Length: 116
Image (cartoon, rainbow, N blue to C red; front, top):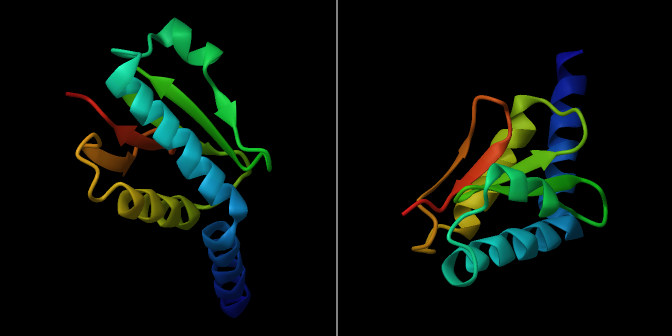
């Protein structure tokens, strides 16, 4: 039974890391981060709902809140899948000075911190 879980986790992690929606996810988060530099000081809680984006695959939902970008996986997955995505996003923004941190918040979604 343990081997079955390991294989399942590896398969899910592989599919997420190779998914074309990751490029789309990065494009969407990059656009929000860019907008925080150019057109929005921040996104109010009321504005946030108007700006929610979902990848074409329906795998991810991205919502700006204040100067944070919230990334949610739209299917039920375990914490390891979120940890993998956190690492991918952290790596993607590693050298981007506009991003202070990428972390899993207490609600279980990933936050990209762009606060000044």
